[in-house]
Image 1 (cartoon, rainbow, N blue to C red):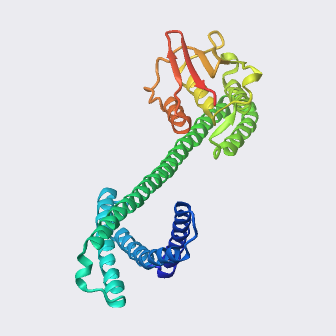
Image 2: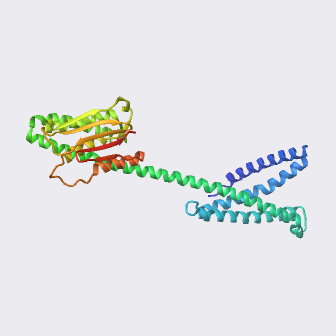
Image 3: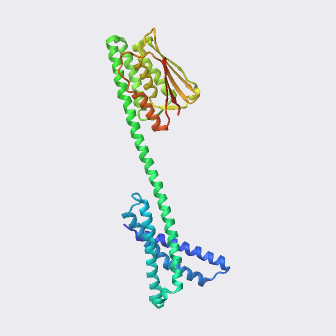
Length: 340
């Protein structure tokens, strides 16, 4: 709904400012305070300015409803400029007829003399300039608004995708842990209770970090040691974890549960024994945290879908637009994770 009072107030304020500025300019140029000329000029500003301001405000309001900026900004701009010129000139003609013909008493023919023609030309130029500036400002405001909306939608989309990626971790880890526990119950019942206690501690960490995008290096390493302790409960001396991370990177972060995925992949895809253990090294180099393991490929294993690495890649791209580095050599497999 068009708010007449609001638009009228805004127009009156703008016209009064115009009157004050015009008066100051007249005083500055003439060097004297001519009250008659200032009053005369102010009267014309008010007489023409308020109706023209309200007419254009009403026109722009209706036009924006029928032709929103978001749908076709170019069409909205051209219609606005042309329509503003048309209604402004029409309003000027009507205002001139009312003032000069009906109130002052000039003949109708006087509206076509050189003075009025010059008046219309100047009014047309001013209208074009003001309308163009107005629409340029509105156009850029809409562009900025669209950018903000798109950025908000992008962040919401990324947040949704990140939540889906993180949701993949929990059931995957729990499923594999229960498989380990099941094996312990059959093979080493005495170790099953200790394993279950460690599993409870680890899953508590997962629940605490599931709503966190990033975790500190210290927390991730502490979690990794607990996770590997579970694996060592089952495989005894067949798995070894060597950690050598400088204190200087302790303030850095990585996506939550990244190390768990990489450690899980190393265990899943390699065969090992106490004689030929799986050795996983965890250390830092410049701006990367590096996870490296020796390779003893399992001969009987389903083809990898590489979901673990893809999960980590996706999370890095969603959060910081970075990527991990993977080096797959005949004897070693290395993943370099950017520190955040």
